[in-house]
Each structure stands twice: as C-alpha cells, then as structure tokens.
Length: 486
Ligand code: AMP
Image (cartoon, rainbow, N blue to C red):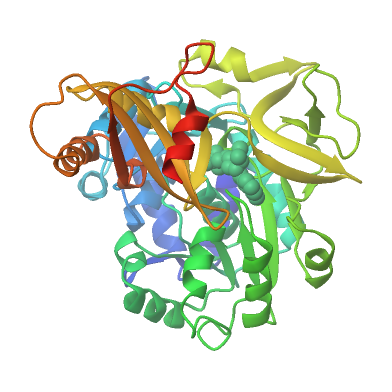
C-alpha cells in the first residue's frame, strides 16, 4: 500500500484519533488528512509544473506535519528546516534546494484559508519524498535525497520488526524534523495510527517542564539519541513511575553506551532497549539489535545490530577487499534504502555512491566490523563526529571559522573528557593580532560564528596561535594541537 494511503486510512477509520500532540495542541488524523489534501491542492495551484523541493521552516508545530504530507501529496519533496538552524545557513539550504517557495507554519495556515480545487498528483515510488541537509565537509550543507521507496523500505522493516499495535502507540519525538532520526518516530507513528508526542527545544532546555510533559504524555515508544536519554537519567525520578506505559526505547545516531542501556533496563523493567545504526544517506537506520541483559553481558562496546532484510552491509578493508570476520574496514551499505545521492551534487554523489545491477550502495565513511552477522561500529574515518547526538563535520566548522574577517587559518578539534566527547575547541591564526585579550578575541569570534552556525557547532574554547605546528607533509599537525588541549 502507498505510505500516504496507510496514513490516510486512519483519517478515515479513526478521524478523532490524535496524530500529533505538541505544546498542548492536538492534530487529529481527520484534520491531518483533510488539511494535507487541501494544502496539496494549494501547492498544485500555486506552483503548477514546478516540482522543485519545498523547504519548510519551523519547529514542532502541527502545521509541519500538514505541510510535509501536503507537499508529497502534491508530488514534491519537502525539505525540513528546524528553527535551531541559523538564518544564514537556512538561506544556503533554501538556495541549494532550488526552491520556488519557502513555507512556515504561519504560511501554511494562510494557505489553508484559501481553498483550491486543483487536482494534485502525489509522489511515486522513485520520486524524491524528502531532502534532509546534513553537514558537508566543505562548509556547504548537502541535501540527501530520499525517495518514497527508500522511506517505504525503512518503515516496512521497522513495522515488521517492532510489530507496533495499530492505533495504540504514543511515540516520543525528540529530534528536530531536520534530523533524520525524527523520520523514525514520525513515520512509524503515522503509518500505524499512533500519536506523535513532540517535545520542543524550550521544554528540553527546562527540565521541570520536560518531566511534567513526560508524566502527562502516555509515551509507549521512546525515540531519541542516546545522549538525550543519558541527560534524562540524571533526574532521579526519570523511570517507570514517570512513564508507566513506556515499553520500548529506540536509539540511533550515535554510540549507545553499555552504561546507558543498563540504567534504562533498571529504571524501566517493563521496557525493551534497541540500538539501531545508519546514516541519513541510507534512510535513518539499517541495522538493529535488542539490547537485553544477555547482550550487555556479552558485548562492550555494544554492537549496532543485524542488517535489515533486503539490505546488505559489507566491510571493505584498505585494499578494497571484503574484510574477514572480526576485522576492521569501512561499512558499505547496499540496498533499497540507499539514497540516489546528493541534490544537484553529482560530484559528491559519485564519490560516495555507486550502483551495480540496479542496487545502490553507499560508502558510509564509518569504520566497522562484522562478527557472526552482527555489525560493530568503530568510529569515523574522516573528521565527522557526533556531539550530543548532532552530526558535525569538523571541516564544516573550520571553513566557517576561516571565513571570519580576521582569521587566516583554523583547526577545530573535539575535547574528550573521561573517554567521552565533551566539547569543541578551535585553534586560530589571526590576520592581525590587534588589541584585546585572548578572552575578548575569543568572545568576538564566537559571536560572529553564532550568526552563521547552530550553537552546537560553535566551539566552546578558542586559542589564538602565531602559527600551527606542522606535520612533515606541511599540514597542520592535529595530533600536536590535541596534545595542547590536555
Ligand atoms: P546521521 O546521518 O546524522 O544520522 O549520522 C550518521 C552517522 O552517525 C553514522 O554514519 C555513524 O557515524 C553515526 N551513527 C549512527 N548510528 C549509530 C550508532 N547506533 N552507534 C554509533 N554511531 C552511530
């Protein structure tokens, strides 16, 4: 069945069931169906034959869901842009997507006030369904194109594996819609007639509000990064009494530590904990494993799981051969969930994607190993890191620091504390030292950078150097710089 029919089905059989709850606002399945249909008609009338992607800038408003579904019902992919993305970067994303129209929740409401009788034609299996922009190593965000069939293969797998009961689940939506982890909760919920329970960035920043929201949420399936659950575990009352209906934790996006999984199993004895792994380029997740006491006892670090059926993971060693069982190599994913590539960037697509016999493959840039069919993640090959669940390309930040008016060169590194990634530190060589203390200089650089990058990408610490130490090849010596941070 077409995913959109699956979603609309609930609008027909249970129109009053809540599809989305956010900050006290509820959107029912009946409203979602009607309003997304109306929005699709509006887009069809407004844009005619222009099938360019439609960026939607907002946060957790119900209009986001109406706009996502309305856009694909009109045959166009949507580009979710969360409000945490600074205006300048959002502008780059909009420009790179070639959009004819950019929407906000207010614009969606206005559009819904203008009924249209146009007849929209929805996306087909090979059409782009959404485009999520991720951190690119050149400083330019790159748009990962996900087709309807990529999304369907992911959602079908999740539904078969997790067997969510129909019209009974409440899914936590923690991730912003511009992060593909949110696709897991959004579409598992919509496809099964579940309720998506969104928490806003303001609630996340205010523990009292957050835990109150949890206590009233009725969440049954928790979807988040491990870092977010780790943050919640700091609160002693975060447990079964606060969330009595919780039966399942689904994690993705970064390493799930044994300690986090063990604490969750203690605090939520009736819940399962799952680790899943995958890049945006292969539609959210490609492997999964239920982490029970036995898995915890046998593995440290934890595995990222078994491959989803129909998709293949190959570990390729440095001589481009298949690595023997247990040996390290690059994780290559091939199968129907692999994206056709980056929007308008044939050069970047050719570097990371390939096709053989009609099956697409993606080089993840992740180190991994396979043992008895289980996949283990061993870190990044390049400078891409995960900090508090956010995917960050250090090269992306560096190119922005370098573009500041008084900076001639920059290196950005991650500071580790107690074996964990803790924060970002930047080393800069200035064009002119000028007046002012190092502290004042740092403050000035941070302020300028905050206008260009989301706050999680602004280094906490800046150090001004006369010159960088060099490797024999004449490159900045990152190892020596890292030693300066200790
Ligand atoms: P994103 O495209 O933002 O989802 O980031 C994808 C990257 O996050 C992957 O290529 C991995 O480096 C990392 N990642 C995703 N899931 C996991 C996991 N379960 N454990 C460790 N790292 C992960």
